[in-house]
Image 1 (cartoon, rainbow, N blue to C red):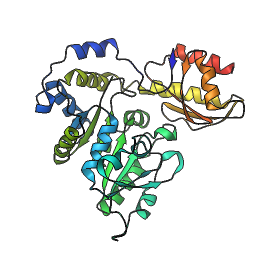
Image 2 (image 1 turned 135 degrees about the horizontal axis):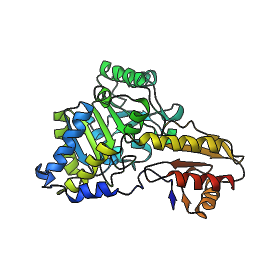
Image 3 (image 1 turned 90 degrees about the vertical axis):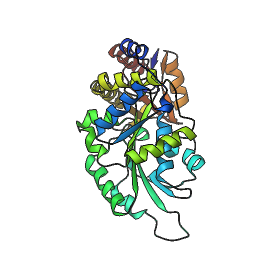
Length: 337
């Protein structure tokens, strides 16, 4: 089986499993799981932030951040294709009573200028703008990267207007691998950062929310209310430690394979267009020969699996369990489609 549906489909490696089984554990709700504490300290230190919180998922870390940063009725500025809005089941409205201002922008990216003109005035008829959210890399933008200067410009707008600034960094390590930037640069910009351990880094479960000590203290309370308090979570945290220690440097390999797929697809007659490939996500639009459903059915005949984005658009995602041999198999099948 060749699975290109997502980078969440990876299985823990032998070394990761060994680290999980040998983990020292306690009760994390009481704060005495040593491996969870080690992971949280490690992540906070990596980004130069005060504290962090281990959670089951990136959706939970994002939604906890929104809950802490806003009051019911406040407005969140984000891109219309951002994960926090598009893929989290209406959670910011359901869990936090937040309103949303959806911006447009090429490949899912927003700019400081667009943010500034969409901050609401002090008017009782309008929601209070309180939070700006960005996603890096941008999933529905084909793994698009934010340039650091733009993120810094948005940060300046937020500070000028008294807004909080959250980064959904589900694939932030993919961005860092490509740009070579230090994680601490990102920690200095944002009030909160979410990073996922179960995507390109290969852990089976888990995301981290990073921020100041007062922010994480409040976030811990919200995590409990959201049902995210875990007990002997050190077995999972050990996988996260292993992922941070062993699986960040290899992300460029995923990017190289994704770019190869993008170049290949752009030469095929049944492909209408391919979004620029910067990291590990390849999004392409099909021509008249196939719909997304019929194309994916054709791939499935060869035990190759991917996801539709819309009726004519398909997404491939490369990851640490996608090998060069699998890449060759996919190339062979695509050339025969």
